[in-house]
Length: 401
Image 1 (spheres, rainbow, N blue to C red):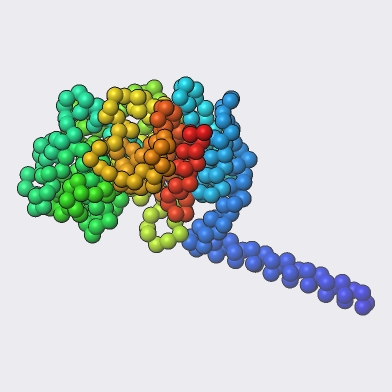
Image 2: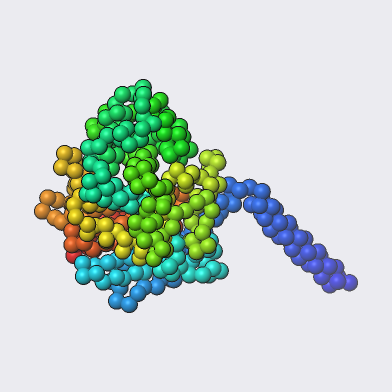
């Protein structure tokens, strides 16, 4: 009888424990289901596990230098990017590439990233815009000193008369006077007035942040205006001009929209704040960003197209403006040329030229050295501090060994 009572007590104790355990699990599920922010924070905490699964899934083409895989490991472990592609074309035109991670959000449950997987290029898109403008200049249809208002004729009565002084050169160099950190914004990321490309007469109403040519201030608006210049001098939409001129039909390159493409990687971004941005697709006006951040493709096609651009006669995408002085021993905004930023640690060392970009949950980078070698790195994540110059320095060191 006593034994039976003990067995009953043990049974009830186990039953209650199981019930409380189930209730705890259900409570956690309900909590994370209804609390989006908490769910996002929990997902972020799983990143070290996801990173190691991605690092274990690296594939490289035959003969690839070991440092290509090392760069992917660094991006994955340090820069929140569980999926990456890197392509390298050396000075002898040998092509190598490596990829890691998974296309979908969940590792092991989706297909592996391959050299054909699509990534958004973000601001690396500006290379095509710069190259197309420089081609117009070399073909005699434009000059570096052409005034913007002679082509964008909507500029007819600017309240800030300095707008009449803006030149093509200043737009290429990010020195046209547009300051995206000013109260007017003048950007295309939901801040400031919607000016380009659909309300260009709004240029008559804005005030520049500084005298054109006085300093460098990175500007997406400036490159949208360059896209309009390309469009008007070719009498076609910008996207059509670029797709035809750069033979997109023979590559993976494609302009993006507010929806993911079928062969596109998933981006490592979750909203944890109160910004209202749900994802990378709905946060931006991609039609307005076409000439500044509107392209997508893979790293191999990116490297091949950039190599072709860099081999064109000067001025080309690696050309600098002689009138702009900067400290090229620092990776600094002031060192932008007509398309890329130059870096050389000391006056005796070789230069490497960079162009990078980022959007929510992705980062991109292209590097060209003086011998014509090209590195293209595409990642589906961004570093915590937005820009990791360690990546640029590591690539510099590998290219100059």
